[in-house]
View 1 (cartoon, one colour):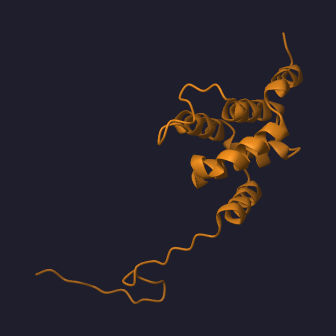
View 2 (cartoon, rainbow, N blue to C red; view 1 turned 60 degrees about the vertical axis):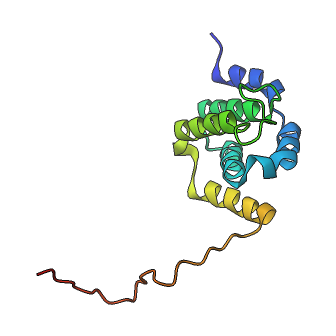
Amino acid sequence: METPQQAAANTQPSFSEQSFWDKLGQFATQAGKDLVEKVLTLYFAAQRPETPMWAKLVIFSALAYFILPADVVPDFIPFTGYADDLSTIASAMAAVAMAITPEVKNLAKQQVQQWFGEETVAPPADTPKASDSIRVISIE
């Protein structure tokens, strides 16, 4: 029976950091900000020495699927091309949630903000604030 280390080593030819960064750089805009942030979250989680080997295997498998050109739904199809990648990445995130620390999330978010620019959306003017008093409305 294969050990987790051997299994991880067997997936390495399918995943390389260079092909990961190449695909992410080429298709970041098409893939969208949310998918890129999820991909980076997994990538940064895999880089942590504390992440268990089984979780790294799940992460590298999902990232390999993301970078491989052969997909269930080809990436060049508008609007749906990255749907299968998103579901694979989301499933991997759910499976390894314990390895995704707040620091990992912040690293991914910072990288996405650097690439896509910081998106600031102002709340509507009538949004209640913490300092607002509570109004009691009685219905008679």
